[in-house]
Amino acid sequence: MQIFTSDHPLIWGKLELPLMGITEDWFGTTLEEPCTFSLAKDSEFLWFISIFPHTANIHPSASPGLFTPELWKYDVAELFLANPSTGEYLEFNLTANGAWWASKFSSIRKPTAQQPDFTSHIRSHQDLSDTHHSVVGLQVPLKFLKKEIDFGLATAANITVICDSPSHRYLSASKLPGAQPDFHQPTNFTTASFIPLF
Image (cartoon, rainbow, N blue to C red; front, top):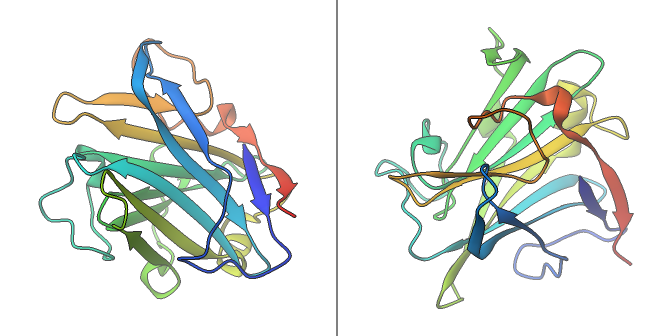
């Protein structure tokens, strides 16, 4: 999983990041429009950027910028970060209006009993200046990620997307095995590859 790195602070509203795209759903059907995203980090933060069409169907309880459970029941982009040596991983959900959710797992689909204080550390952003798309981002402190999953060169990552709800299409940047969609496969995530921006 490519994570672009910058020697300079990244600032929302002035981000110029390469975009990556997912072009097929879980079953290999080509999308009419790729789902696009970017991962980047500066000296302090990891940035998860996702671009949604304005037609995205979001959770009815999703408030812009606020922590909201069960976003995955509607259109959502998800970032998974795993520590291969411990089996622990983090899941971040982000939807088109900047609402977000996160959880830490001790093993597959098993949330840790003591959850990190996500709301004190994470910020979300939204840009509606594009007439056809909503650009949203999560800003996560590297110190927080280091503490929770020892974020670094050994980190495994994946980006997934649920779109076209309520019918739902499931997309994954990393090729995951299985006849039915299952994003909780940290052993099949891709090792992070840090690529300088400048």
